[in-house]
Image (cartoon, rainbow, N blue to C red; front, side):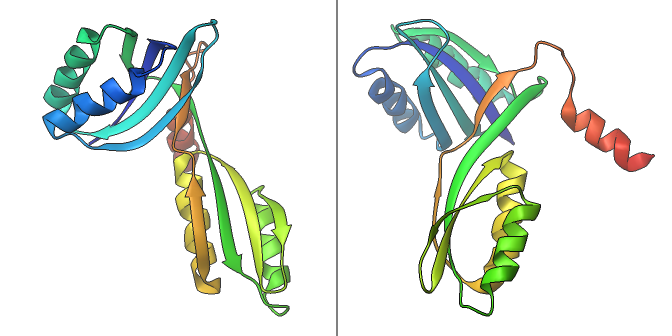
Length: 172
């Protein structure tokens, strides 16, 4: 199972290297990793997606807490969150397919950020499921390149679980 971990660390040189080394030594794979400044100066938030069962995640959490610069580790997989990812995708776009691609981009609330004679670069922001769906609809045109940031997430203070709301809306 994929787990999303939110890790607060002191913003110092080498912290990310130590975390990556910890994962490498234990044979764990980091599927997605995003790092940025947190709400407090001198603190960074690392959001990572890792594969593993509950015991593996518990072991990873314990090992992370042993690192000097780690302040807080939280498994936010089952916690109501706002999750986003940024993707740039370069797709083949001939004069005959360009309008259809632009229309699909509008449906996904994506933006065209570069136009060339035979391609488009599209920027899309959303939850990871949206990224997968967008890639699937663009496959038929021929995807040249994809760059993704990886997931970032913050827990919802409201406690509203959007996954639960989506499921309950489909049942009505």
